[in-house]
Length: 93
Image 1 (cartoon, rainbow, N blue to C red):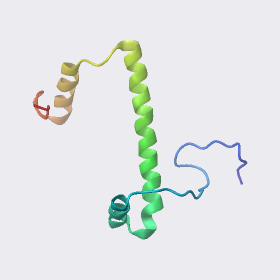
Image 2: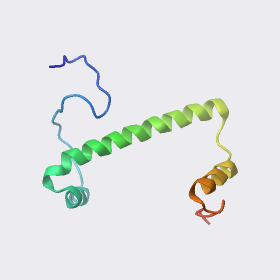
Image 3: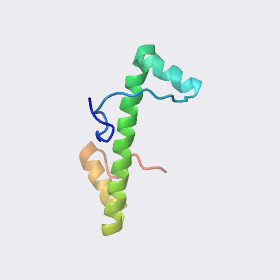
Image 4: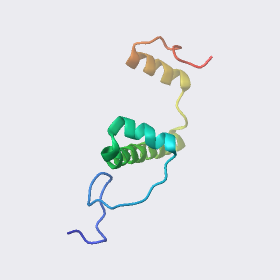
């Protein structure tokens, strides 16, 4: 058994029960996807993805602080290369 001071990365360690409040529509949508017994696992994965996104946002902000924001035209060109679309495709009009 791990002591209370042990730190675990997201997705590791013993489980712990908590109470969460969700809107009825959100809970219904989750249950439609995973059933009643899959809600906790679904929320665990969603929380892990959010932590990853938060960390990525922090990394991007730190990069921007040192190097300045990315050039939108360069980003569009690289996105087009990755997706096979033309550089202006998908841009909001």
